[in-house]
Image (cartoon, rainbow, N blue to C red; front, side):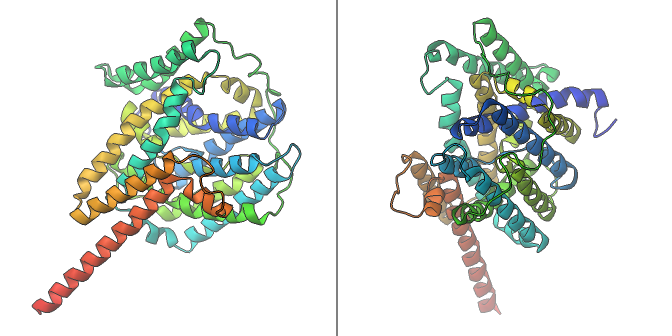
Length: 432
C-alpha cells in the first residue's frame, strides 16, 4: 500500500490522470504547430516535447515541489505570446528560436525569485478572496472557448453532427461523477472520454492522416528549432509573463489546498521547480504552469491520492519519446477533449465560490471584487487588437482579463487589509 491505495489501484487511476493530462496538454501545441506552419514531423516533435516537459514538470512538482496532485500544462499567457509572435513569423524565421530564449530568461528569473525567498512574501498576498476572484475569472474567461470547443466551433462542414460528441462526453462525465457507484465516480473522466471518442468514431469520424506525423520513437534533442537567439521584444515579454504567472502558480496551489484540506505548501520549492521546468521549455515547446483546473478534476473524480497522479505524470513524460503516439493522440476529437475540460470547470467554479464564502468579505472588499470581476470580464470581451497604438508588452497584458482582474483585486485587497490594520493600531493607541 502506498498513499492509502494499492499499486494496482494507483496504476488504474493513473490512466485516468493520463487521459486528463493529455486533454489539457495536447490542444495548445497542436494549434501552435499550425500557427507556425510546421511540417508533420516537426509538429509531432513539438507535441511530444510538450508531453515530455509537462509530464516531467508535474512529476518533479509532485515529488519535490508543492507535493500535491496539480498537473503542469501549457500556460494560456505563454500561448498568447507564442501565438502573437507566430502571427508575424514566416517559415524558417528565427521567431521559434527567439521564443526559446524568452523561456530561458523567464525560467532563470523565477529560479532567482525562489532562491531569494521572494515566493514566501508573494504567498501572503493571496488571501482566500484573491484566490476566489482568480478562479471565478478563470472560469469566466475559459467558458466561451471551452463551450465552442465542445460544440465543434468555429463552424466546419461537420459541426452540425460532430457537436453532439462533446455534449455526450460532458453528460456522461457528470452523470458518472454524481452517481451512486463509487468506482464509476473515480473513473468518470476516463469513461466519458472513451465513450465519447468511440461514439464519434462509430458515427463516421475519421482522423485522416493525423496519426502519421513522424517516427514512433525518437530521442528528443536539446533544441527542436535550433539554438536560442536573442530578441529584446521576446525576452521582455517573457520576463513580464514570468511575473504574472506567479499569481497563477500560487492560486493553483491555494485551490488544491482547499480541496485536500492540507497545510500550506512550500512555495519556495514550488517556485524553484516551476522556474527549472520553464527553462526546460527551450527544448522546443510552450511554457508550462501548474493548472488550476486540477482542483476541479480532483473534486470531480474524488481521486485525492498523490500516487495515481505521479503514475499519470510519468506516463505522459514517457510519451515524449514517442512522437507517433503523440500524433495519434492529437487525432482525438477536439469536442471530446474540450468536453473533459468543460466538465472539470464546473467544479472549479464551486471552489471559487467556496473560497469567497470563507473569506467573509466586508463592504469594501465586495466593492473591490465587483470592480475586478467587471474589469476582467470587460477586457475578456474586447476584440483582439483593441489597443493597436500601445506597446506590444502592454497589449499582451491588457489582452488577458484574468491577469488584469486578479492583479487589480490583489492590490485592492492588500490595501484594504493594510488600512484595516492601521485603523486597529490607531484604536489601540488611543485606548492606551
